[in-house]
Every structure is written in structure tokens, then in C-alpha cells.
Length: 218
Image (tube, rainbow, N blue to C red; front, side, top):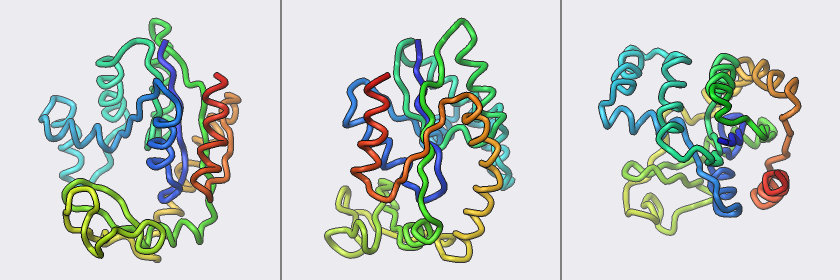
């Protein structure tokens, strides 16, 4: 059976970093980023990738059913007993329901854990406003917390580091407000299923320890 482990959290909460850490700490886990899958589908010009592109070209959100199709294609391509860490999915209650329906079909699997990474707003703003991204490989740095060895140059590939235009305080605060409004019902959805755990995510090692213990025990 498939096992889905979901990481929820605001922008800047460290979902991607935590997923990577967890994958290294617990054998047999596969990190699934819907953002990466979407980019791969677009690059491959797959049927679902082209469908998603129609919405993205208009500046519209990709519909829940299209996002779920990208996820289901990825899961169907893997082994039937895999353990997945989801980063960035689901984002809405409808996506959560679609995932549950997919896993319930033919008794494929279940959502075993949902971890909500909690970080104070001011810390989130500082994390995002200081974020640097490599134009070539997408590696992420921070001007003070994770600075590159050479200013403006990626340690991994030597690419140019840049700051996204929307990574400023005003825009970040707006993004956090949108996140809180959109995610409140999703948090309630998983809380009612008794699979949600809240994790204080200020310290990378403590965050990993808190999550790893639960995942290894399952």
C-alpha cells in the first residue's frame, strides 16, 4: 500500500528543506514536490502538462483536478508500496479529497501523517525577504542564514543567484494572509481525521527530530 506523509506550512516554513532532511534520515521515503512535477510535465509537454499550461499562460491557478492528475500519474509510475513525502500538496480541501479518493480506489493506500510546520509571521517574513535562488539549478540560499560561499554565486553549479521580485515584506505579508485564508479549512480537514500534528519549525534539527520519531514509529 502507498503511504502519504504530508507537510503543510506557510511560505518560508521550510517544507522543502524538511522533506529533504526527512528523506535522508528515514530510508525508503520519496520526496514529491508538486512544483517540480508541474515543471517536469510542462517540459515534457505531456497531455496534462499542456492542459496545465493553458491556465498558467493566462495567469490562472491550475485547477484542482489537473493538479491531482499530475500527482496520480507520478504515483502510478512508482511502486505500489512506496512511502511519499508531499511538499506543496494538497493546497485545498478539494485536492485533499481527490487524494483520499485516489488512495481509496482499489485500496491503494492512505494518508498516514500530516505535519503542520508552525513559524511566527515575523520569522517567515525574514526568511523569505532574504531568500536567494539560483537561476540555473534552483538551489535556495539566504543572505544571512544560508549564505553562498561566494556572494551572488551558487555553491552547487556556479549559477547566478537572484531575489524574486515578490520576495519583499509587503508582498510576503499578503501571501501569508492568502495562505492563512486558504489553508484554515485544510488544516481542519486533517485535524478531523486525527492525522494532523503541529510542529514548531524554528530549528531545523528539532523539526526533523519531531517528525522523524512519528514517521519511524508508523
